[in-house]
Structure formats: C-alpha cells, structure tokens
Length: 490
Ligand code: ADP
Ligand code: MG
Image (tube, rainbow, N blue to C red):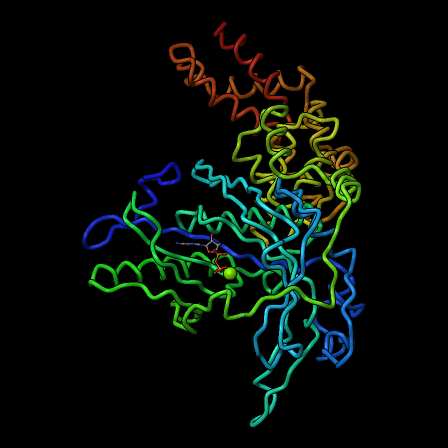
C-alpha cells in the first residue's frame, strides 16, 4: 500500500480487498466576456446562435485571434494551483468530426500546455488530508451543442458555446475513494471561485469532469482505466465512481479483463455504460495550429498576475486556526465559499473571532440551511450580526437573549441595539432587582433550600427559576454569585 491508501478506503470484493484509483480531467469555463479566439459573447443562455462570430462558425478564411484576458485567467489559475507556468506554449489542432464542431478540429494544447505541474490540498471531513498532484492545465475551445429535441426529423446545432475558452485541469491518479474525488472537485471549485477564473456553476456546465477509474489489489501497479465523460455534479461523480469500481471488480473477480473505454454516466439509473473504445492521441492527428503563433509570455506578465492573487482558502484556513484558534472543521466550513468567508471576516473584524465564528456557523448557517437560503440572500447582514455580538460582549444582553434578538432581526430587520433598547431586552445587572427575585424563589421553596445545603448541585435549579422569574434577562454571573452567598455555599 502506498501512503495514500487507507484501510478504510478499500472495497471488499468476493476474493479480497480492492483499491480504487481515480484521476480527473476537469473542464472549467474561463470567466471572460469574450471567447478564446473571437470577440463573441460568452454568457449562458440566450437564443440559439445569438453569440456566434464568423470565427466560431468556422467560415472559410477566418483567422483566430488569441484573447489575452483568457490567457491571463489560465496563468492566474496556474498560480493558484501552485503550478509551474510555461512562458512558452503551443496551440494544436485536435482533429475529429462532430456536427457541433464546424472547424472539424478543436484548438487545444497538447505537448506544450500553458501550465505544468502543481497541487491541490484536499481536507476531508474525517480529518484525512490528500495532496493531489496536478499534471497540467491547458487552454482549449469548447464545442457547440446538437439539439435533438426541437424537430421530429431534424437535429439542430447551437454554436453559442463554440469557441468559449475552457481550462482543462488534469490531475495525477492520486485519488483513492469517491469521497476523496468529490472533495477534490469541491476544493478545486472553491479555488477557482476565489481566483475569479471560473464561476464553478456545474448546473450550467461551467465545470464538468471526466472521471478516470481503475481498480487494483493494494500494492499492485495501476490497473486498466475507464474514463467516464462529462459528469456534471459532485454527487454524480461519487455515484459514478462507486458504480464503476464495483463493475470492474466484478469483471476481474469473474476472470475477465477491463477494456480501456470511454463510458457515460446515466443519472437516472446511477450506472455507467459503454460509449466507445478509448481513442488514442494519435487518432486525433494533433499538429501545431498554423494559424496561431506559439504563445510567448514575459515573466513580468506572470509576476503582475501573481501580485494580484487574493488570499486563497488554504492560507485563510491556516490563519484562522493559528491566529483565531478556530477548529480545523470550523475553518473548513468558513473558507469553503468565498461569500461565506467574506461575511465571516466582516463580522470578525475588530471582534472576538471565535465568538464571531460561532454565531456565523451555528446560528446564521444553521438558519440559512434550514430555510434553504444562500449567504447572499441572508436577511441578516454582517453588520447586524456584528451588532449582536457587540451587545453580548458589552454585557448588554446574555447569549440566550441574543438568540431572540437574532430571531427578531431575521424576521423584522432593524438595528440590534435599538431593538434591545426599545423592547427592554437589556440584561438586568442591577443586583437589587436580582436579589429580590432570588429571595422570592427561596421563600417559596424552603425544601429546595434545605436540599441545596446538602447538595450544592441543586443551586442549578435555583438559577433556572430566577432566570425564569426575570424573563431571562438577569445576568447569569450576578445570579450565580447571589445564590452562592444566600444559600451559604461559599
Ligand atoms: P489521456 O491523455 O489518454 O486521456 P492521461 O495520461 O493524460 O491520458 O490521463 C488522463 C487522466 O487519467 C489523468 O487524470 C490521469 O490521472 C488518469 N489516469 C491515468 N492512469 C490512470 C489509472 N490507471 N487509473 C485511474 N486514472 C488514471
Ligand atoms: Mg484525456
């Protein structure tokens, strides 16, 4: 077993344990206003063939012109993946026929991609950490789309996507379970979103994965893999791997061998099925595109982009743990979405970060989840939540009352301090008022008073009664101190 193998990741077959090996080719649509080699728009939706230039439609004599913004996005992504940036790279033609590919080839990068080796650190909920090697990242064109459901006899072609820039991010075969593979894609998506280089929207097809799966006996060399094409949700990636690993194990255990092939995942049945036998690179007759010069970047161009990178999730996570004392779990929850982390950092600014994290994760995220809302739709702004945390810190309200204030702000809006003032929710720190409540409870329960003298734990019951009598507004510290002295427990 290699270092990446954990016993818990093994799959039990009829004849012993198996290990699944996974490598991913993720296609990420570059965030850019215009396509990779034309000025046509890239936005999702729109009438079919509304965003198509003569270049995208491959009219004779049209010439591609590289979009510098897309190149910058690829470099930015490479830097975010801690990868080597190749100052010189080449665009090649990958030749194949498809009705939605009017050029008859895709412009891609083959032997000389713009980005070389890098890595992605993946932390799982179980605490397991996997460092996934990145093999390469290259730029390529997306194809159009065939529409088969518009007419009883004819198929139509929509070229809106034709020529849109994609980054293909190829991982090494470093993943060893469906959980790891799902966490890898989530992490990659988070990094891309922090960088602003891909919106990561899997429903709209901005991010999709080809999943390569093989199985082997722990310790053996790699087995023959199958590639499952175009899986477009994280849940489906997990299901496809589980199904495919089982399928391969059964074949081998029955004495068969795996044919290297390209397969499709059927979301309705949860199964994968054969699409075609695996094509080899030479089937595509790759050659450098004579319409495009080699892409030469200056180190200055790269350095300028490097200087503009935001703080990335791994760095934020480490800082939250080291400086704020957050648990790795809480740090992971906060950094996983850029919008969440921005919100949290607003609340934490100038306040107790641990307390801010508790309110954001437990109260806010809890409530958002329950109501199926995204952080951007939160009825409570970071300033309002910060205001609640301030009131607790100042001793104006207890943590318990704070939850009521949270509830009011959630449903009615408003400034927390004003709400507390207007509705008389302030904590009672006036000892005379609390003392009165303590005396009344003690006078009404002489038996409990006697018990408390024997068994100091009974004092807890008194705390509850006094809090009830004061509508939850008494300062718990003051109540405790008074009870201790009055019950003679000091
Ligand atoms: P190709 O160019 O034919 O698609 P690559 O060598 O570039 O092949 O690999 C494509 C993907 O397949 C990579 O993500 C890689 O990690 C993965 N891969 C390679 N070998 C295996 C294997 N034996 N099992 C699972 N995945 C693999
Ligand atoms: Mg491939």
